[in-house]
Each structure stands twice: as structure tokens, then as C-alpha cells.
Length: 103
Image 1 (cartoon, rainbow, N blue to C red):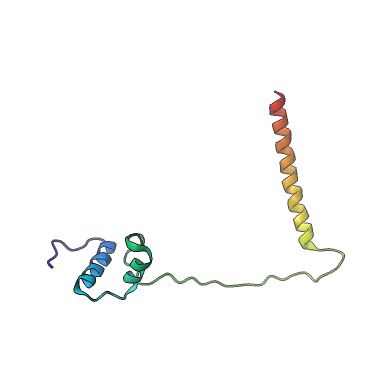
Image 2 (cartoon, one colour):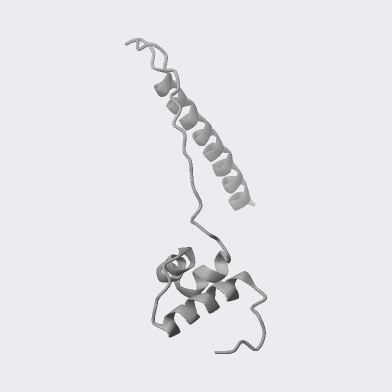
């Protein structure tokens, strides 16, 4: 098969390479073939020319916890402070709504 013009886009080049391999009867087994198998043509267009899937690295870091005591729990104090913040905002909203209804 003769090409009329060379592919100008990386996604088109990936597609043409896969198409040629299928027409030849030997399906390609590269990263583009895997992307095409997983997501179809949209996957080739979304990440053209990508040689491999991105590598994600996660690092887990521990946080120091205060020593446990039965008299005070900082988690409960933080939870209570969050509720106070939400209730204060809710009270302001309800006052504004009541004032608007009264008008």
C-alpha cells in the first residue's frame, strides 16, 4: 500500500502503524497497541506518541501523634472546632434568610 502523504501527527502515525500491522496479519504488541486496545482511537488521540504509560510514585509519610491521654483528645477538639465553624456559618445564613423573608 502506498502512502499519499506521510502522517503529520503522532496520533495518526500510531494509527497508521497499527493499521499496517493488522493488514499484514501480524498485530503489533507495542504501547500504542495496548492504548488502542484499552481506550480505542480516543486513547491514541489523547496521548499521541506516548511510549509507555506514566509512572506514578507515591510516598507515604507518617505524622507524629501526641501521646494518648484519657483527659484530652486533640482529634475531638479538632472535630468540635469544625462543627463550631459550620454551625456559626449556618447561623449567619439562617439570620440572612430570615431577614430577607421579613422584607
